[in-house]
Amino acid sequence: MNKALKTLFAVGIVGVIWELMHILTQGVGIPSILTTVTNTVNVFPLLMEHLLVSAIRLLIGLFLALLTGGVIGSLMARYKAVDELLAPLVYLVTPLPKVAFLPIMMVIFGISETARIAVLVFVVVFQFILGIRDALKSMPQTHILSMKSLALSNGSQFKDIILPYSLPYLFTSLRQAFGMSLAVLFFWKHL
Image (cartoon, rainbow, N blue to C red; front, side, top):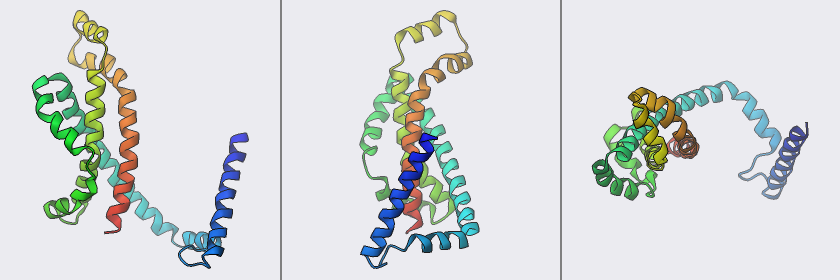
């Protein structure tokens, strides 16, 4: 109950600040709370339709980025030659603002659903590549020796040792990727 009261209090504070900003700006750029709630209720079905389309786009993009990043990150962690080949490229592209590549993606894919998903994948795939690569490279030697001494199959190695060890890294990458994906969806919508 205490948590619910804190949340209600926070919502009330935001509401008061919002209404004060509305009054101070004389309604220019900041509508009143009543106007906002009324308009939200009026367009709610349309809003939910757009939210569903964006959620599906987001899930597909994150799934494809996770799949691609997982494969590339695993290959980089397992094979030194692949790591030496791809690591400089990954570390070069990762800090770049991916939105700058948006015009290139639009030329390649056009303005379509495929383009939107491709941009999402491109923006977040590097989070998964680095997260999975770092997870596998930091795996303790005892885990690796256990897999070898037990002669586990590849499936058992993945299911019983690699996946449980990598999950914290994976969830961290997913959390970061989700935030970036929302920003990209918002940015694309306003082009």
